[in-house]
Image (cartoon, rainbow over all chains, first blue to last red; front, side, top):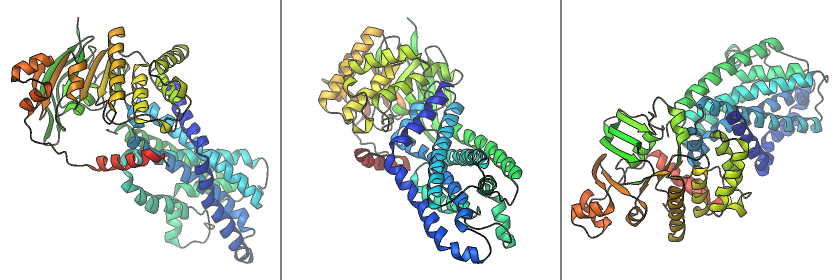
Length: 248
Length: 268
């Protein structure tokens, strides 16, 4: 248990020390929020959708959590290159503990980052419909963070070097974001697109966040939570398996 | 006294390539044992098998009487290791690196802090204990790795080319510390190096390995006598020939170079 804690603490410490990185990682969500939020706002309103900023803010929170958690998992590659991974692999600790500590650490960091984005959204004018929804929102944030930190760990354990990184970014992480309905409603989509969005775990995450924060949902909050829990369990198993196969 | 490390007919194959080809040797408790060999001779592979990072294809391996395959965690608890490449977390301080290691090796809190303090002082790092490792010089990092390796009072210390890239001062200091720990705590030391003078100076016995086979084993004197050489280097060349071994660069080596480029500036 101590091993899990110390590895979790390591992730959180490293995050809190990388101020430049924290500020840099706010850039992209801010662009989406401000440029798209205010740029597409009038069109969205005319189409009868209400406030676009209200609609997309949970999506941007989901995006921030997605990116941060996947990258914290892929940071395994850095540890492999800079050698620290070896230190944890020869330690007299079952590998599963090492994997759990890292993944929970990554998920925690992603939640901190998500919380920062919530604050930014509030400043930009986003208002949650009820206070009761806020803890529920954090619960969904945690689920998203665990799902994608576990995915990141699986990827990080499987890649040998940074060459695959662009591939993962362009063909996995960005599609997960764009297909999640973070930027557009999932209603009345073309059949093919609608099908793909249903396969994207982040769709359920963003939908859950919307259910909690703005009280509107596509799948229903219970379905969202159930899907996320199942995917989280599956990906944690995958991550543990991939991690156990690492050879230095 | 029993053998701390016992290897019998050890074979390790990677596909068709035989990295370690039927080697046998024993290292008694308290001995400093050196593995010498050209690049790609199988030194690091042997260390990785002894330290549970790789599984042997066949043969018997015992570390402190235990099989690394079946008693993974007990074996891991029994040794400390300094790898060929650095294995510190550069974004943590020296103290945090020590502390993290102590927790992973189940050293209780009070003992952990006391030992970390003693070792950091011994290796002359105490003043910099709260500085991030990325601000350390190569020699300081090496010293920290060795101090860390001693933290959980291991019975065996594995040193895989620990002095690679260090200046003569740091090398000298490092071996002095290792010798001192060896004499004080009877820690068994298993080391590999490319520097003949180091092997001659610190090692009780030397094994020369080439193409995965042990070609000679004995004290530095014995090796010299065997080959009618005046220096260990001459003996080494007589035993292993003078052709240069080039390992093909794998993607890992390329990344290692990239990592080294980054190392100067700090990461991310």
